[in-house]
Image (cartoon, rainbow, N blue to C red; front, side):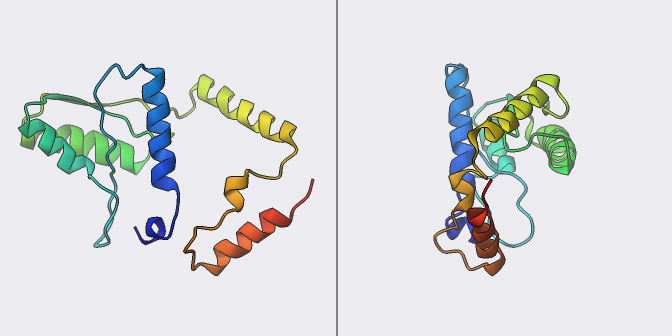
Length: 157
């Protein structure tokens, strides 16, 4: 959370992605942007996924679809946290009838093509990197971050 509080754009970028997806879906289903994977005693973004599931269940919602939009592949946070801790254990504890997780993109050919298209577009742009990558967080205190940003800024094609 300390990185986010120093100005890291992660929450806004994830929110913009959710907004874009829901717009494409014509807002056909109700949704909430919630956050998972809090580790240790440090605070993290909220509301948390598990607390949201509990709250929705208390309000009579019995069917939920979890879409880990910030993750493009299966890993511990999808396979264990979402599929087991939430969809099995928490669902059973709360009385949720059906929690499913949207399939990860993994090696989906359409996803691979989209990535290839992005790489191609980037190469054609003749830019070293996006302007966003060269920005430090407003309250950044990490000298390595500043050095990395300076490196990218100084590069030429």
